[in-house]
Length: 311
Image (tube, rainbow, N blue to C red; front, side):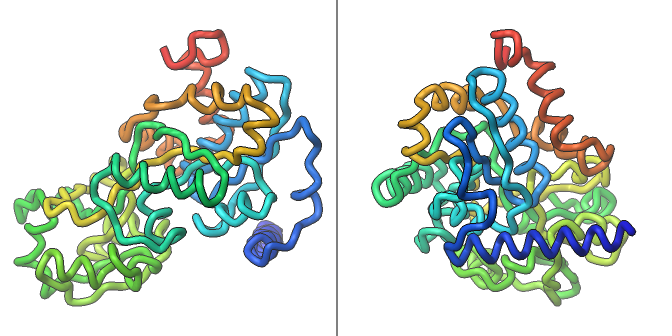
């Protein structure tokens, strides 16, 4: 029964993604009431946690209701949801991803400059407001087991060069063929290639390296499994990967209709550090707590519901 439900759910999600990308409406998504804010979130743990945080804050601080358009398959799909008028807010935009994949620009390693470029494009071309970062950046990061790092004295990505000819590496299937900050660009920047790079679903890379099926993997820096699996994140010493600061995005239309939303969205500015996000993700991925519960617990523990938000 669980399998049937899962396949049914996946089918519905694929249908939603297809309709959003095609610009068509989906029953219920276009027809929100004036007092309901629609929040789009991708299918990653941190996207869902932050979407629920935004929803909780909006419903607590204003008279508005919220609804989540959840589990969207990529940054492109969630952007199309906002662009096509199917959503009012995107829970997280990553500046590096938007720059290279949404706007088709070259990567910018300077975090502030990257955010400014992205902010101007969203404002001038799409009439959207790109808010300041929550405080964490979810960057690509090469990681190995702590055991291998200690044995081979691995601290940075450059330290892999001596082992690379014999290494099997798992990586996000999008990254392997990605232009700019993908594998080809990485090999050129660092001056070496691995024996074999296996495109993998990102959620599987952590267990793959922990179990020894891969010698190293390219994962995300905020994942909660890094700590629980005793993985060593290697320093990107050549600063190859661009900034991926995490920020919310809202349409100027919804901010004009409900100006009180701007104050709410700024409440989390700079409040979520990399370590905090790793711990929040770990509660969902390792302890199996629902993202909605994790989000509410964080806001309660940091006094967002009693007028002392973030203190």
